[in-house]
Length: 130
Ligand SMILES: [Zn+2]
Ligand SMILES: [Zn+2]
Image (cartoon, rainbow, N blue to C red; front, top):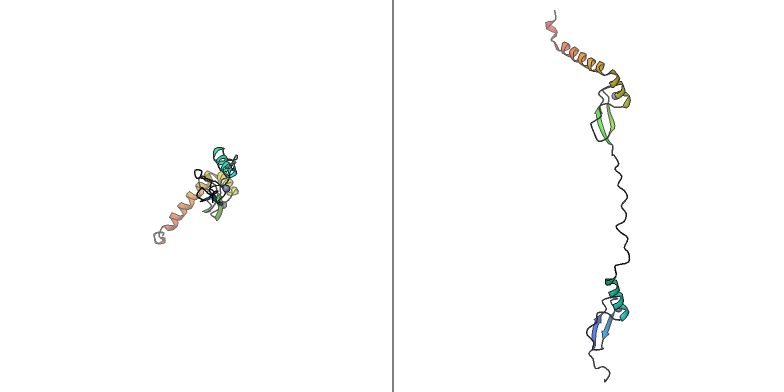
């Protein structure tokens, strides 16, 4: 019994988690072996092995998302689904219509005016016409 002068203190290694018994009468040690202590201390002392910096985020590409919008073409009066990019709403169903509308320009406006006038004439009660 001479050899076990020191109380046996059950411990759990803070590094490797091994259950071990400290019986050397020394101040409580947190690690089972010097190796574990060195490992633990080395880990806390040195910076962790160069941790890759936040994974390089892919350069954010600002992709313009086209939205499908349903519109009534201001030129051919067709209801169509067109891709709409951020900005003013398109007024024509196709590039052709836009071109024609622009080419016609004032003429189109005139036609619409005339149509409106025709409509107002048609709205006049027939009874008044003698
Ligand atoms: Zn250990
Ligand atoms: Zn159109």
